[in-house]
Length: 392
View 1 (tube, rainbow, N blue to C red):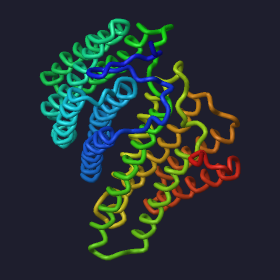
View 2 (tube, rainbow, N blue to C red; view 1 turned 180 degrees about the vertical axis):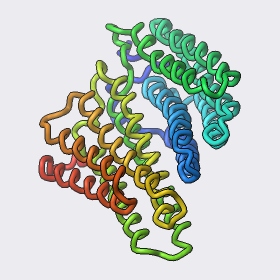
View 3 (cartoon, helix red, strand yellow; view 1 turned 45 degrees about the horizontal axis):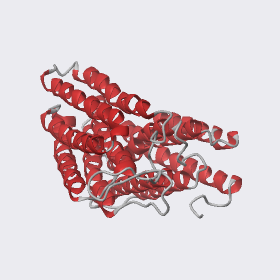
View 4 (tube, helix red, strand yellow; view 1 turned 135 degrees about the vertical axis):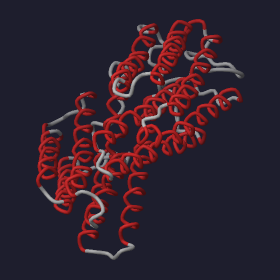
C-alpha cells in the first residue's frame, strides 16, 4: 500500500512529497473568479473614500475582503490535499465559483448600503460546497473521518450563525462579524488537531501552496495596477499635469517594488507543518494591503485633480503601503526565516516614515516617499541577497 493511497474515482489524499506539483487550470480559473470579488471590494472602498465616508469604507472593505480571502484560502488548502479532479470535484468547484460571483455582485450593497443579504447568500454557497467536499473525503477515508467531520460540522454551524447577521441591527453587525470571523479562523486548528501525530497531519503540499499564494499575490497586485490605471485614465481626460504624472510614476514603482519584495524575499517561503496555518493566516495582511493599494492610488489621482480630499488621498496610499511592509515582516517572523535584522528594521522604519508623511504631507509627496521607500527596500535586498530567490 502506498504511503498516501488514492482511488480512481472519488476523493483522494495527495502525497505532500509529490513531484512536479503545480497549480491546475481549474485552480487558476477559480483565482480569476475570486479576484472579481477582490476588485469589487477595492472599488467599493474607493467609492466610500471619495465621498468622505472613510470609516464606513475601511470597515466595509475589511469585512468584504475577509469573506473573499477566507473562502479562497479554504479552497486552496483543501485542493492541495484532496484535489481529485473528477466530475463531482469539478461540479462542486463550480458551485463555489457561483458563490464567489454572487458574493462579488453583493459587495457594493455590503460596503455602500450595509445590506448583507446577498453577500451572506454567496458566502454560504461557497462554504457549503466545501462542506460537501469534506464529507466526500470522510466517506472514502475512515482514518481521516474525524478530521473531515470536524471541518464539515464546524463550517456548517458557522454558516447557520452567519444568517443572524441579516437580522442584527447595523450598529452591532461589525461585532457579530468579528465573533463569527474568529470562529471561522478556529475551525482549521480544531479540525487538524484530530490528525496530529499521524501521517495525515497537515497534508498540504508545501511547494504547491507556495506557488498558489504567489499566484494569488500576482493576481491581486495586477488588480491593484488596473484600478490605479483606470483612475489615472479617468482623471487625465481633463488634462495631464505634472502632479498626475508623479502619482502615476510613483504608483508603478510601488507596485513593482511590492512584487520584488515578495518574490525575492527569504521570509515568504512556506514553513513546515507546525507553522503552516499561521503563515497562511498572516497573508491576509499582504493580500488586503495590495487590494487596497489600487483603490488608494485611484483616490490619489482624483485628489491631485481636486476631485477628492487631499488628506484622504495621501493616507489612502500611505496606509496600504505601510501595511504591506508590516505584513512582510510578520511573515518573516512567523516562518522564522529571518537571517538578520536588516530584513526587518528597514521595513518597519520605512512603514513608519510613510505613515507620518501621509498624515502631514501632500498626495504627491506621500506617494513619492512611498515609492522611494520601496525602492530603498529593493536596493537593500539586492545588496544583502544579490541572488534572486525566484531563480532556482
